[in-house]
Length: 469
Image (cartoon, rainbow, N blue to C red; front, top):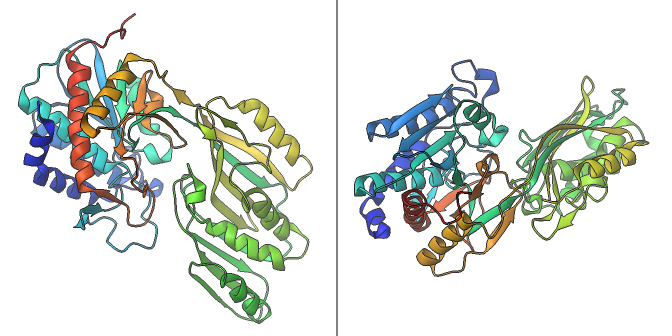
């Protein structure tokens, strides 16, 4: 079957569908969450839109508590899963095009979710529709499993798999091509000042709203008059290529500093605004709680993102460096100081040992550590027949060898007993997930759709050798 020809014939509908899905601002809204809309109204609307598309096309559809759902085709005891998500991170600042407009320009479609993960979701969905319309005989069922809380904790698929069966094999089109067979562990770490006493220097600090994004804005209020520090601040910021502001009077000063957002799996791709602002404040504060707060940020995150200062650094040949992203940084006289961190740790990481080392290092410091959550690493053996099949498909459609990769991001593949991340960011393309002006190349969207059609067809129309014991 020439899937590339079929994709080209239906490309206008595919692009239109992606525009419609991007136009739904499906960001988690805890304040507006209800029993009927557990992640807020917009994630629910995006999920409902996808399921309705499946229903209109004649597929079997199921909604699981407005948290997740599936679109299914085929028959058989075994199940091939394709795990996608329709929620997105907040738009953030600095967009040239409207983040929820789906603007097409210069061969790209711009919008929050274009590459993470609405574009890949639409590609997989259209691949399923092409297979159904082409009458390809399947001896397994195929499910497009759609979540609405991937960016904020996987509560969607947790609920889904409490009620629905686990696929025999599956993939998540939510990362990079060729194939990602190893995903780092993801731990949520919270560092808190041990005392809430205030020294009157730092009155407020706020940066970030998600630990899985490098914060691109930091704001602070200090109890020092603007005339004392304005020149110092502007001189400091002259070495920083991002925006800032400073306003105040003779008793208080308010700062705002811009950075560059990036995905937490590689914090070095961004500029952490909290670290920039804390670095300046640390120069002007005298000893006390305020300086304890900024000094910790500078020591732990100011010069590196690998966790060396905290005793958390580690590297292995399967998945590389462990990384730490200080995604949410806050201070108030009422709540004290907190640094919320997303740690992406290596597949062979000695987790308990490293946490104990960190706790020991913090024993005599002003900070303490709480582990708030931990999702263990995921790994599928390189010699598994499932991996070999995907490698063959990728090489056929690209002419390139399908090297196996490891990532620090977490995809739905990690919730599968046997699952990998399979696209759809092609090698050599810039990773703009979670950044301003996120986009997907139209030609990549079309090529990925053809690859997914071939993968679904092969995985669901015959038994992979060695798949059964």
